[in-house]
Length: 453
Image (tube, rainbow, N blue to C red; front, side):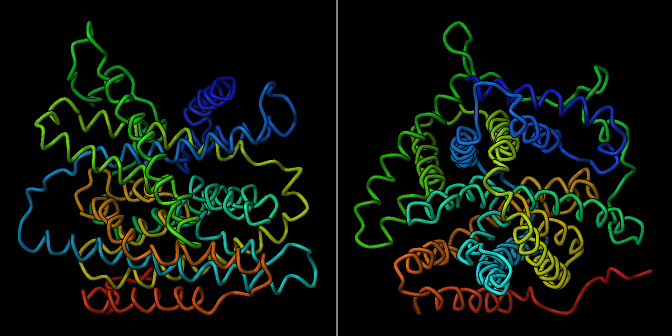
């Protein structure tokens, strides 16, 4: 609770900083990132009493699992669009998912090679480079999960390095994404943008601007508060995820060991099952999806701040230079892939899709949606919806590399090298992603160029 209290204070200060400091308003820096930076500094200076980076490491992992559970409990809205727009949205979702998985498959090998080349001037082992996609493509929650997995194989401080990769990814997401969005507006690449007013820049609604609902009450408060009911659903799914994880641990070999560690995936699966049961029993009416989505957003904001506060400079300081170099190379490759494939999906919102891919491949899905909303504040394009739907595609295509990457770390720790099969899984996954893009005609000629006048 002390850790939660300090995190809450950082968030409150971050909200004030976003509203009052012009620089943060101009670059639309989320309060959670500002709060995380401040918390990181104060914690490493020894000012915050009663907590350390390890507890925020654990807190981030749990918040990540809770956010996935909440996503699973939230019903998918039924779109009223038909015909070509639905077909275009389906193509966009599949394309974004394929590009995301392609990056997940390429960047661990890239990270390994970069650190291998740097071994002449640094003692940072190349195996830590394998953690790049867990941080960039998935965010701090997954980074810590995989980092802990690497540590169980004997790679010390892997979770610290992984979460540091993730934090740097957020800086690239907004540091490049916001100027890119503004460039697109200037060049006329974004067709649905309106001026960024003071409310958006400030990040707070004044009384006369408060129109958005947080959801309807579905329970009589004299019985149980509606929010308590929704949180109880999330908590119940968390326990279910722990049992599912224990069940997966019975799978023989590396698969069982690795799959059982993916608590966030188990949480998502259990949440889907619970939602399905509620629908079959006709009690889904008591679950409000607007409120459930707010719980997801709350977990996301808190885990971002917590991830920053989990970093211990005393641990990662000696490897800061190679960390900055490998993340820079990963960011360059990620931007190149985001722009190249994003501009070739085909459709009226490829620029918005490019922003979404970039944000999602350097931060999280909410980061990608935040960048899309800069150029499409009223969500008139399908890009934001596609970014959410792409998770289904990504979950199917990425299962192999989710197991292969930690298996490589385990093999190297045991002195067995990469493992031909693990390397093959990464290469085959890349090929599959490219084939998927071709089959669904989402890899054609560019629909826009950044240098357009």
